[in-house]
Length: 159
Image (cartoon, rainbow, N blue to C red):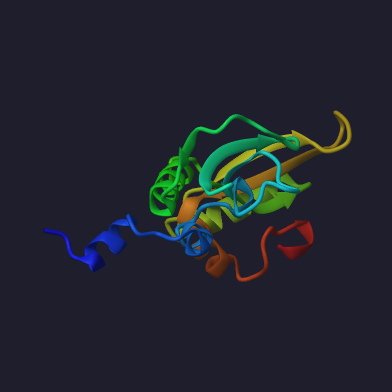
């Protein structure tokens, strides 16, 4: 038989007001979710209580999609929401550079500390202005912050 403490550890008694902090501690990107409101939120999953019903849905460009989960029980809704947000790959931007060599330098520095990263090339204003973004995933953002030692994301001026 499970104790009350065991149920809490499993998240079955999870409360919405503590859920955001838990997700953030576990490496989930705060921009990927909202708890309590969908107002001013875009491209994120939301957990909102409406007329006594806990509702989970996705909002995109100010438009709320139909609910993907509803429950009168806060714990059930929190568990569903937690599982949904944890199933997403959370990429954290650690650097944005004009110079590809600077981006690669940051990647090598992270790799020396066992932190995997990814680099994406994108066009800033036009075809002649490429930029390079370096990302880490999930909880790797915490050691990346320690290794890089400055507020993220870094830029050419920081390296």
